[in-house]
Length: 133
Image 1 (cartoon, rainbow, N blue to C red):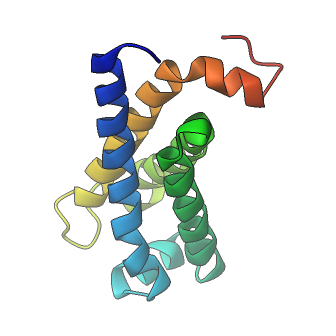
Image 2 (cartoon, rainbow, N blue to C red; image 1 turned 90 degrees about the vertical axis):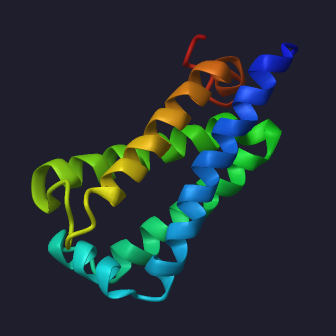
């Protein structure tokens, strides 16, 4: 990446996605009632909550390391696709009167990381050779 505006955009997207995922880890790892409710509703409590939280931590770290941004974005897009699908099918957009905040945050991470995948598509090819940029 040589373009300064694209580089700035990439860092803004990386930081936004990582911050959102990292701030939700507290609730997942401390078994906050909201997280327990969500993962119980999905039939994934407690291992799904802990596992998804661990994957979000890994995705956040990968996003912030320039050489692994594409892998972090790919992992985050997958996780957020699952979250969005869960909201649209089992949980509902509003969960426990949150006004749809969790849905919006998942959507924001999904969009940020989708754009990062576009920006870093050539980097992704170096990790996954059967994908052509």
